Length: 430
Image 1 (cartoon, rainbow, N blue to C red):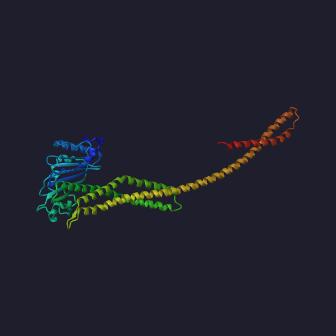
Image 2: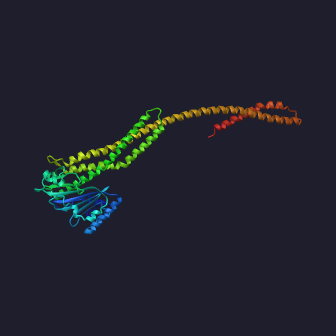
């Protein structure tokens, strides 16, 4: 797109990012209306398949299919509208139909969708719910007695929302058709208000269930957490005993640290997601702007009462594992320090022993040197005596015994100077 002003070129993503705020605008054409919502958990391969599956629906009704990189799509078909969104770990389908029936949930929007296409959807269902926006009438009014039959006479939860423009009722139960239900009684909702209200209710249901995915994991990990805590106590208690085997304790502590870190790395993302989803639930509840209907628990109160303890359990489990990891790290550092001190003492004793042995070897070497000097002197004097005897036999006037006795001091001095020279060379050798 060109501009009439001489400004720099547009960023490659400028218009995509700018129009993102309009990407999920309402497609409801009027009120009253009905909607069916599905949230499906999918693997990476199933995410690829769902695009092909959605393209098949578009081809059947002659509607332009979403682009290959799209993560949301809205379109109107013959008798219904569809909104598809692909999130990080789940995808949602919402089907809208205009108009109301006398019984709000007998003819849900999902009945307008081709059954063969629905039956080939991939993934597993996390959330399935129907919502119906109806006008106030004699049969449908903000009267719990008249509304209860639409929810199999279960205990109702509801409130006035959107600044008094509507009332919402539900029982947060899965009915015989496999769907939960929301009944919205319209007082003076605008079309856009109705669309936003329905979307918030669906998102509350999605994020509520997604936040609870971590709860079974937290309950499963509780015995492991208790066991690890007891093992750490046993190790630290053994460290206080002077006769403890520090090497064995260090091995046990290393194994315990590895197990704890494995639990943390395996479940950290799930616990972090649970906290993030719960924050989204709280924000959507604020957006409803609920006002109490006398004698009825509000949606926010019910969810807070049921969901908050589970989320707090997940947070507590995650925090306890993190705290336990830090304690194991501190204990490991303390034990390693103690082992290092013991090793240092052993090394010091070994050096002292080696020094003593070196001194002993030096003294023995000195003694051997003394003996060697005597032996060398003896053999050198014997050689000179033999030479003198030979000379005497040839007629020389030489007394071998006198010669031998006379050269002994000189031999001793020569050998002593030789050893001293050797010591000097060894001392100055690098």
